[in-house]
Length: 250
Image (spheres, rainbow, N blue to C red):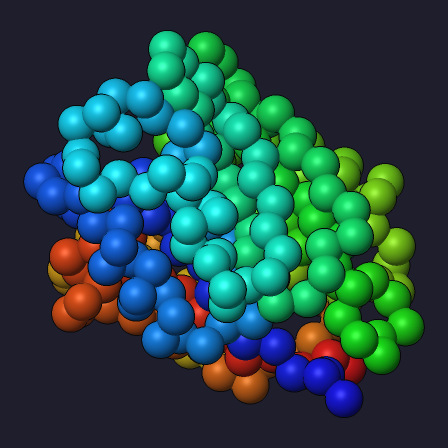
């Protein structure tokens, strides 16, 4: 009975290293596989970019989320957040289990930051309820984050049954640590690192994390452990570290 899940969240910086020095999509795929995660929440995923396809000879012919999922994660969903001439990017969820429903909500606070939250329902074999997964990428400023957290709260209250297991993960840009006031205080979720380590994780910059930007929140699970994946090879792949957690259905 698959009552245990290993989940991970990663802002992949559009497949480029810190300061956009090198294209790292192939190294990214190889490293993601080593995590052994069942479900992966990804931010800043390129769905299409004609310029990169023309300029890099080994640029994948498929969208990044398909390329990264490959044969490991059989199901995936992508929510386009930002569109521009020749391309677009957004959030993605990769899953070993069937994604039975998904949609993407635009939570952009203004025209300079295109943000969204990708909501998937996943059918895990033998579970009585579908698993709800929400991948988020929030804005840089407190006022916009507060609006986006309220939108997330509304979505959960309206679309996620109280008895259904729930995971919310992604880049909250939350160095002020305000997200838990809503998600823990009002919605009864648990943040994986707050529970296991005493405080949300430092995840940025990946070479030597100092800022607490990324999160993994769960409801309906026991958290066994949580880990920050930093240093080699992660610090060469993206400017964010990877967060992962092992969780058990209650």
